[in-house]
Length: 148
Image (cartoon, rainbow, N blue to C red; front, top):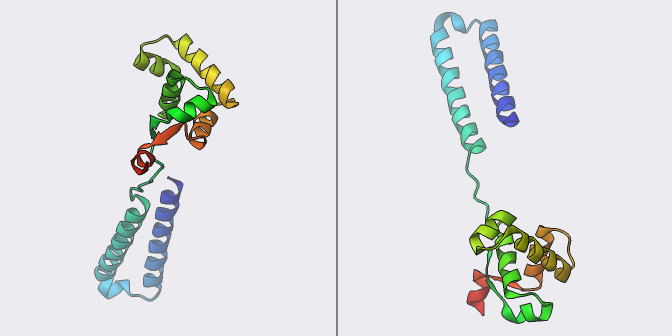
């Protein structure tokens, strides 16, 4: 928002300077309306170009979310299938209550599973747990599944 305000402030300042220059050289006596129309069109074009640059929707490509579980790696890490399922839901950004509702179990059970996941992966935060699961290939993305 700040760049937009600064940009339009600079445009208005430039317009005022141009009008002042026109009045100094007495260009506004005979062709005043023409100059005003010309400056207005100029600033209209500049404003349209700036608005397109400032308000373009940017597409951000991120890594594909994990969609499947690597069962062989689960056994190596000692993580149960339910804990891996909860890891995937944590990666989707769901809260404990949302995960509990989705899996039809209590929130306390979810908390216990998450505690076990933290202990087994030796992490302290949900984001660290998801990151480590991806690093250890416990969770595989759809793209990786197609390669196998």
